[in-house]
Length: 115
Image 1 (cartoon, rainbow, N blue to C red):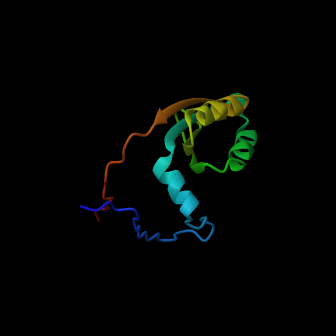
Image 2: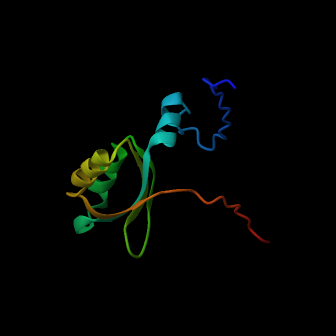
Image 3: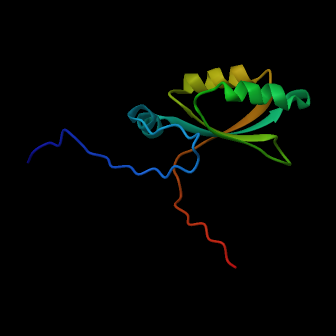
């Protein structure tokens, strides 16, 4: 019985936004080997602009939505290590308080709209 040394991964990405970054081997490695975290951020002193400027400068943010009710923003970030998570928490603290939810797995869903 032989040992498989190489794998071929075929990935098809539907580009929905012309501003999406290209899919690279590095981005794939980050997706498969990273710590993923959903963050609820509540800005301090209503300073949304400073928070948004800070978040726009972070390369490991997958999405950031402004939301309503309990928190001000919902983000998904990917980190190389827990020390990088801690670094993010320290860096964001002048702008917002945060609650972090670590992702263990994804549940497959199919979104359907009934007419």
